[in-house]
Image (tube, rainbow, N blue to C red):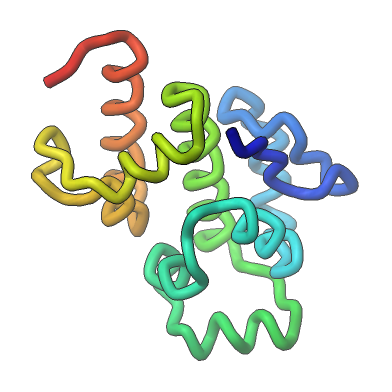
Length: 142
């Protein structure tokens, strides 16, 4: 199982959890730096191209962020955190990164017969996936 140490400890994201709202708000206000983001990208199953789609940024813009080591603005930082929290939850529910990654890549009838990761580009989709993970966790399958 992959361990989701999402960001480097010097940024105090170690216990990334949606119950720690004030820490998350501070992260959003400060923005997530590209190097910190890359730490997560390297631990996630998603390519930079997929991240470009999730964050509504062109690949060229993403490359410029990388070259300039820019900080993501609040909306993109928020999406990165939402996906990171969701990914952590998925690992907890499935207990294995390979199983969860496979689930993200498989069409899901309960989610409109699309791949769950296709819903990562907006908050409503991410919330649908969270709800589905909760149902799986408690054995309530649709």
